[in-house]
Image (cartoon, rainbow, N blue to C red; front, side, top):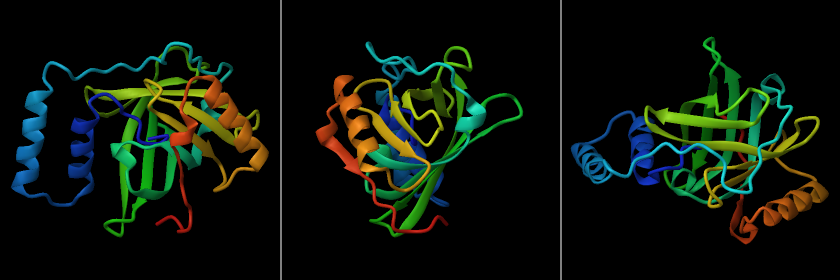
Length: 205
């Protein structure tokens, strides 16, 4: 999302992602999905703007941001629960949208999982605020709130303060950078004590 970035109605999108990631699924999965969708008809939304007090960085360059990023830390959520070795690749589509390919290793199943999505800018392309869509109306916000001048690391917020990612071009961050990002995240109202620090011990498939 960094990686798995569609936050609204996470139960619905999580089921959709699971179905998409599996090559075959049985009937009870489909029945469960339909039940959740029926319960969500009046609550599904597509809020993609940053939370109050969160300001995406300006002078943003998508060309420089494109490429592979490793997930260093995250606030846990259903999309990535149990995943290690998480990364996200960004590239520009011919229609001007952004292709995002998220990948992670599911320790429970012993398998790699991936999800592809499409992102568009909420404002102008120089403002690092995106809406990311996995399935039509199911989308969420992706807001870069801190960015290294050389695009070596990024602090990314979601639609609210339950979603936060620290990303980097390398699998590890220098301690002083990590501490600075944690301090900035705390100043923005995020509970950094709940961050999960992602292990990267496997090569990408």
